[in-house]
Image (cartoon, rainbow, N blue to C red; front, side, top):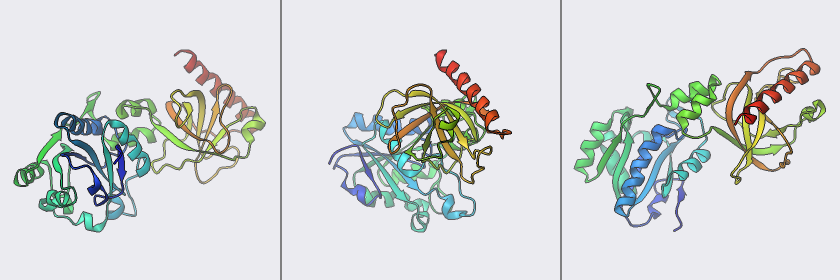
Length: 315
């Protein structure tokens, strides 16, 4: 089989090559620096032993099962998360559906449950705060004890800190919702991005003299509404073009109920409707505002454009 590969279940992952499997386990929402430390340990073990490294993650988040009225908002959807994880040197990403049956596996049965589905499993890698099993009764100490009983090496990676605080998906969600995009990017270890197809818009930006690309993008965890400095590229492009993005409800012109991502490229724009593009978010410029009319809006857009243009001119 060709690697790296994606599998939609543990059963499907039984097709992995017959060599020792080193497995990183977690939700890994955002694939941030803390997650990368866990995954890097599995990849290193695989390279040293001639084995394979894989990530086991779950979808949806357990909160969708246990508190459906208020589930944890995800930074990335399952498909985007898998694509990011596949860039980290692993041979495979396995996404297991988090069902009542999975939630019901007793903590002491968790490793045998994995071994039954992954017969070449050799070692397991988790974060030091990893919880598992029915009622989240299992912790790293129990996992290590179970590993000794079932012939599996268990490695827990210490949590990663930045600026004196633990890196976590929860912390990053708060930063995104506050518009602290530069701080969030530091915790990610890469640039927060949106991907989507360019779809038809109302062409108001063109009327105002600032043509925009309307991106079909509906994240679960919504960043703060406002204006951002961004780079825009085709999904296979290496270099992005400087641009200004607006994400929000457009209160001056329509007060929509669903936020929209619009991007104005600072220069010739090579993209057209139907293209799929990637938007890398670099800096929060200002919050979304309501203006008295189109002329005031036009004036503010010009100021935003000049502000972001200066950002890129300085780099």
